[in-house]
Structures are given as C-alpha cells and as structure tokens.
Image 1 (tube, rainbow, N blue to C red):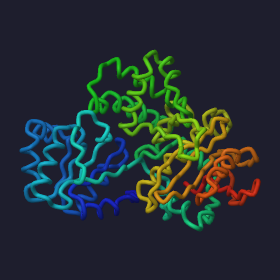
Image 2: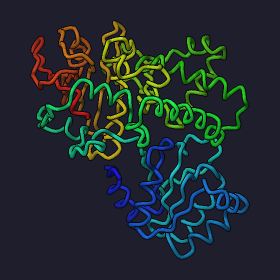
Image 3: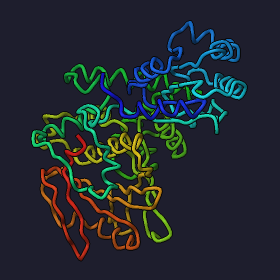
Image 4: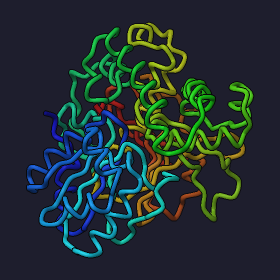
Length: 416
C-alpha cells in the first residue's frame, strides 16, 4: 500500500474536531485511507455503497446516526449518497460534543452539492484527497510547495535516472491508484468505464438531471479536454455542444464538484489593473485528459501530440494541488495574463503575501522570450517577496538573469 502524505494530518485533526471529511474523486484512494485511519482510531466503519446500509440509513437518517454514534466514533464512506444524513450528523455532534466522532468521505464536494443545505461550520474540517502524487508513488520526502517557498528553493537532489520518457509517462498515465501501472488496453477500458460511471451515477448525487444532461456532459468533457490549460471560453463551448452559455457554466460547476476539472482563477490585486479575468481549465488527473484526447506515450515521444505542452502544464497543476493538500505553507494558486498576452502559468501566493511564479515549458531548450511573463509580473511585484521560476524538460538547475531580474530554471523532474 502506498503511504498517503495527508494521513498524519487527518489523524491529528480527529483529536481537535468533531467531524473530519475527506473529499475527492472516486478511485483516488479515499476508502483505503479511511479504513486505515478508522483502524488506527478504533472507529466502526460503514459505507453507503453497501445496499443494506444505504437502505437502512435512507429510511430513517436520524435513528441510524443516533444508533451508530451512541457509544463509539464512526467512519462513513460515500456520505454524499444520502444528503439527508448531514442534518442528522449535525444534531448528533451538537448533542454529544465528542472530538473525532465522525470521519466522512465523499466523492463530490459537499459544499457544492445543492441537495446538502447544512454547512457544518464550526464542527468540521475538510480535506481533499486527489489521485496519487508522484511524490507518493516514488516515495519522495519533500513537499514541493514548502520547498518552493523556502530559502533553499533552488536546491534539489535530482535523480539522473529520470528520463524524458519517464516524465511523459507520468503525464499520460496520471495518478489514479488502479491505473498508472496498467497496460494501454486495460487503461482505456478503465477510463471508459470511469467516465460512464461518473457521469451516469455520481452526477445525480449533486443535481436532479435529465438524460439530455448526461449526453451534454459527455460532450462537454471532451470539449474541456481540448481546452486544457487554456482560458475558458463559455461561448465557444456552448456553440460546439449546442447549448447556451449559462448551461455550460452550470455543467462546468458540476464537473468541478465531482473533482474532474478545476478552474484556476486569474491573479489580480490593486496593482494589477490591466489583466485578463477569465479562469483557466485544468484536469485533476492528466491521465483522464489524455484518454479523452486519445494521446499516448509513444506518439508524445515522437512529437505527434499537439496537446503535450498543455498536458504538462496541467500535470504540474495537479501535482501542485496534491502537495498543497498537506503542505505547511498555506497558499492559493492563480494564473496571470495581462492585456498584451504576457502570461505566467501559475502564481502561488502564500497567506503572508510571498509570491512564487512558475512558467512551464515541456522542452529542454531555453529561450529568452519564455521569461516575458515572469518579467512583466516581477516589475509589478517590486515590493513583494517574489521568486520567478521556469520549470522545463531539461536536467540542470541554473540561474537566469534578464534586465536585472534574477530567475531560475528548474527541471520538471522535481515533481516525479
């Protein structure tokens, strides 16, 4: 079993909060982690994926929760399947007021679920469990977010055995625990079923949907994959799948709530007057995006993958949010683009206002123009603690000075 970096944090939080929730996409390893923690904390385990438990809990949520939580702390898997259970959990923790009463998992973001009206504010802390990071797969010790915000951000013990093919394989395979070691045919079958199950089954846990919605969502997924790492253009998407802009926006929210895609907001503050405001779209897992785009490792190595640069950028994003989930440094992630189209792929801003700006290039060659966006942002961030970094497909860590601004180039292999 691969150790999940967030495990110790969740165990610790159960000592301080009455409810701890683990949210994330299906097949990301939530159940495995929940069962492991439940065993450590001596909690009774229930899952709503089991029909008998689901039926009993659905018929009378209050009695079910009262009974199972009377004398012991409990773990409940797939809690979003019975939205009515949440008010019953709230009543139980308010009455008994024990720390660590409930460890919940959900395959959708309960805060974006229109069927759940209770916020559980003040009672619960929530964490995201994404598919495996390559730090977990390859047992790396450092957290890349904490490292980038540290004084030795440019010091990594690089593994010379990691090749370009290894990097591309990581991007194309993604991080779902059951997928990254499968063969090509098995992986295609897995993703085909995963998409069908997610759209036809899990979407109903968020909204009351019609069959036409399912059809449109299938088309929308493919359209979003073709726009990966690009600004979201609602009008173009609406035109391509023949629905209106507002419906597209609603469906995109549903895909976000199901942890399939993520919209990265534009970076702006009082000093950034002239910037593009549209969000960028990224996939939580680039293995899924690669499947939707019908790209493979062999074609990517031969240069026939027109989406490779965008997939690599989205892969960096997916790794960043995985590290973000257990980092000591509290950050938010943005993208930056001004009205002259100078852009920076990722702007990481810490709670103290420090900035790490990342530009992503999949190739190993470095050109001066690659730093145009970093220079534009550096000029604005004069009074900030600012680091500008270009992550690239090469092997060396080097300084790069332009116009009195010192940047660094760092290999993408630090993520795998």
